[in-house]
Image (tube, rainbow, N blue to C red; front, top):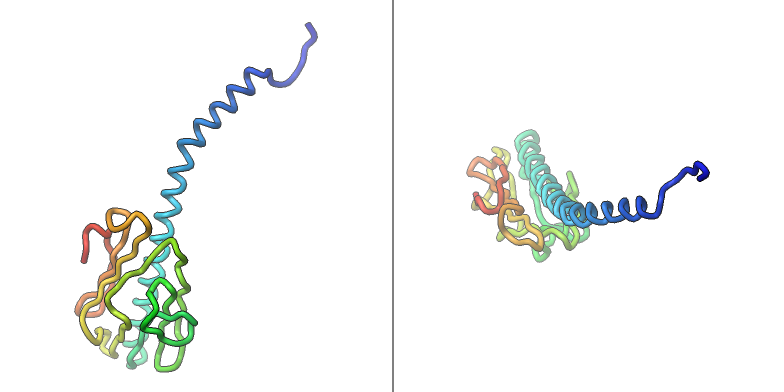
Amino acid sequence: MPNTRGFTLIELMIAIAIMAIMATVAIPAYQTMVQNNRIVTTTNGLLGALQLARSEAVKQRRTITICPSSDMATCDAGEPWHGGLIVLEGANLLRVVPATGTEVEILSASTQLDYLPTGRLNGPDPAFSIEDSRGVGTTSRVVCINLLGQVNSARGDEGC
């Protein structure tokens, strides 16, 4: 028999079978990781905007507003928070947080937040729920603002 190089058909079939088994295990795990990363990214964007608004209110000694916005320039109380939000000092735009898309929702009863020059909120303490198609649970997040205007996040099943 001549000495040949390469794979036999049986070796190739075994390698393909192993790859197929690994793909069936890895793809669902990858999809879950992507969904979790979307929620974390949305939560961090909201936290960053809230922390910026509070620090700018104290630093500038002015009222800073956070509100949903569809055009990323003016407040629109009728829009959902996941459609995009802006941070304003009077008419000056400080930060834009773009829309999250259709995969993740930011839910809140508040239509606008005003940080006073003291760093406190003008009005009741709002809470934001960040969730996807999996609903509220260990994968969702909740963002809470306390009486002093400080922001923190927790798992959705823990609440504020």
